[in-house]
Image (cartoon, rainbow, N blue to C red):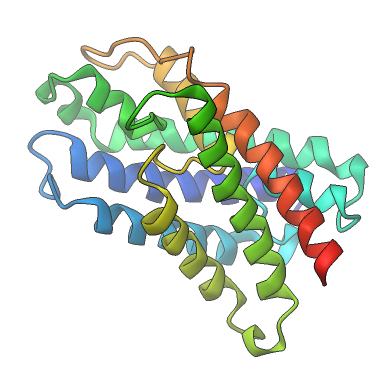
Length: 234
C-alpha cells in the first residue's frame, strides 16, 4: 500500500468516527442527541485509535498535516514524502465527511440550526477572537506533537503506543478543547469544511471561511514547534 493511500484510508476512518460522533450528539432526532462533550472527546480519541490501527503499520498513521510537517521538521520523515501524506490526508478527510453526511441523511432536514450542521464538519470558537483562537490551536497541537514524541520515545509505552496516543487526544480535548473545539489537525477541519461547502446539505448556511485559516495555521505552527521542542529537550 502506498503512503498516499494509507493516509487517505486512515484519515477517512478518523473522520467517519470523529465527525460521526459530533453528528450523533448535535443533530436532531439522533438517538445520541445531547450526549455531551465527554462523549465527543472520548469518541475522538477512539477515532484516532482506529485510524492508527488501520494504517499505522504502513505510514505510522500521521492522519494530520501538522504531524507530518512536524516529523519532517525534525528529520523523522523525508520532505519528499510530505506531499503524498498530506494529499492523502486531505482527500481522506473529505471522503470521511461525505460518508458521515450519508450516514445521517434524514437528520439534516430535521435540524434547523445552520451552525449546528456546520459543527458536524468543522470547528468554531466559543468566543471569536482570532489571536486567542490561534494561540489555543498552537498550544493544543504543540501538546499533540510533544506528546506523540514522548510516548514514542518512552520504553514504558512500548506496545501501548496507539492507546496512549488515543488517551492523549482525549486529554487535549477535555483540557484544551473548550475555546476552539480543538481542531489540532488541518485535514480534520479544512477537508470536511470543503465537504460542507459542496454537499447538498438541507438548510445549510455558509462554511465560515473567515475562521477557516485558524484551524490550519495554528496546528501547523504548534505541530512544528512541539516537534522541535521535544528534540531540543530530549
